[in-house]
Image (cartoon, rainbow, N blue to C red; front, side, top):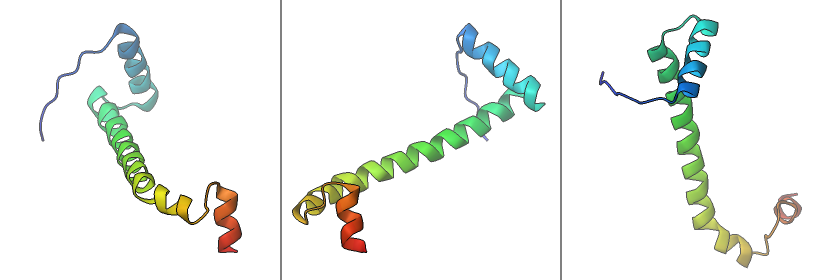
Amino acid sequence: MSTLTVRLSDVEDQALKLACEQSGKSKSEVVRELLSDSLKTYRLRQALQQAHAELSASARQSGWLTEDDILQDVR
């Protein structure tokens, strides 16, 4: 396991302390959970952006400009 030092604003520090009090977890535990969740969301967003970049031209060529266009073809 590695160590990371992060500087927090006073507002962020207070929010973290409150989250720790409410959850009964340490700062490290709360930050690790939040970071893990955030990284999953980040990776998903990146994958969706990549798929959009790769597929949007083909979709437009197929006449798919909206979700309704796709749904009409799928049905």
